[in-house]
Image 1 (cartoon, rainbow, N blue to C red):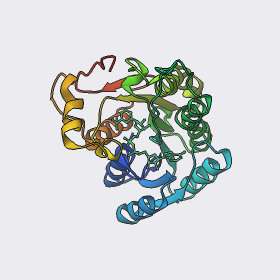
Image 2: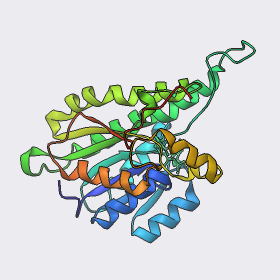
Image 3: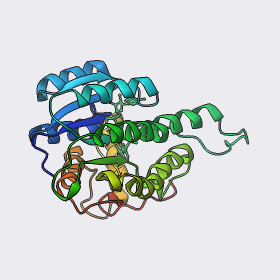
Amino acid sequence: MDINGAGAIISGGASGLGEATSRTLAAAGAKVTIADLNADKGKALADEIGGQFVQTDVSDEASVAAAVDAAAATGVPLRIAVSCAGIGWASRVIGRDGSPHALGPFQKVLEVNLIGTFNMMRLAASAISTTEPMADGERGVIVNTASVAAFDGQIGQLAYSASKGGVVGMTLPAARDLAPVGIRVCTIAPGLFDTPLLGLLPPDQRGALAKDVVFPKRLGNAVEYGHLVRTIVENGYFNAEVFRLDGGLRMPPK
Ligand SMILES: NC(=O)c1ccc[n+]([C@@H]2O[C@H](COP(=O)([O-])OP(=O)(O)OC[C@H]3O[C@@H](n4cnc5c(N)ncnc54)[C@H](O)[C@@H]3O)[C@@H](O)[C@H]2O)c1
């Protein structure tokens, strides 16, 4: 699919992997709508790349509906929706003292990472389905973000792994559901990427994180994530697939 002249909405598009995606798609000629909670970073980036910012909470129905409406009203057809908004949480099923994992944080992580991704996918797909089809009957592409934690969840990653496993699980049925209207659905499962999330760690700890990466022995660069989004959008035969982007990393228990 040709990115030039297409509309794109990116949740979590103000920071990290989403920011790189916003930049990559804008540079390829897309009209980008950044849908993020963070207004300061989102507005500044939107101005820089000639896009628009809509303050959005992906877990809120009305909030995402408003963002998708804005993305569909830019004058070019909305064809690309990328979900990058996400949060983490670390807690074991029971703590060292035997106390149970709190329910609230588990619900919150599922609400943002899984329900938020579904919320964006359903509303964006509905808008994309109203556009004119292109070659092959294609109308658009949805790219969701899981994590290698969907497959190799570490100790204390229960909530996060469950949320990302849900994103992986939605990929095939969503692609099947959306095939009649010509929308492809793929998921990227990143390994460890050097984003503001991990940038909070001291450099020696960040370096240690890369020890289990097979090659190259470093954290991923967000630009590499944006590059894969671009590839998925441009290659019309990618569909219903989950792509690990991890330098061969298989995460150990801790
Ligand atoms: N960085 C990594 O190593 C890594 C690895 C695997 C998966 N991921 C996933 O990639 C995605 C992006 O992560 P990142 O590292 O770029 O993080 P990040 O913190 O740099 O960016 C996440 C963005 O999501 C936004 N956000 C959070 N909650 C939101 C909500 N409810 N509604 C709208 N926006 C919201 C934040 O404001 C932020 O701009 C997440 O889903 C994360 O789980 C990251």
